[in-house]
Length: 86
Image (cartoon, rainbow, N blue to C red; front, side):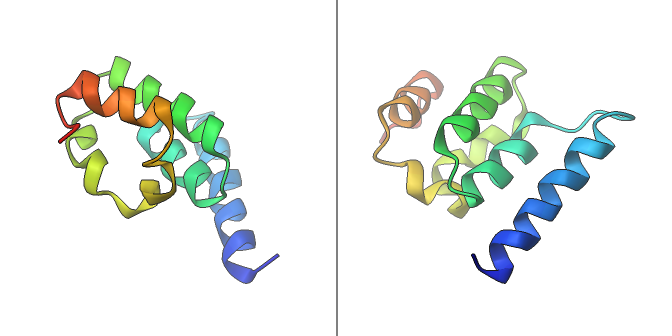
């Protein structure tokens, strides 16, 4: 495992700790899980972001955190729901 992986895992741990005391947007968790290669968890958090109508979802299609999800059917379905599929 690389330093990047451990740094990302540390970021996730920090977000989880902060979430005990304050609101952390689901999009932040989605970014971290996607960076860790945990696609299902990333997509679960993106769905939560969509349900909450998180404004940052507007950049979802171009967000490099999610480049590895573009071929996933759940990701393309989410883009379609948002009107961002093309």
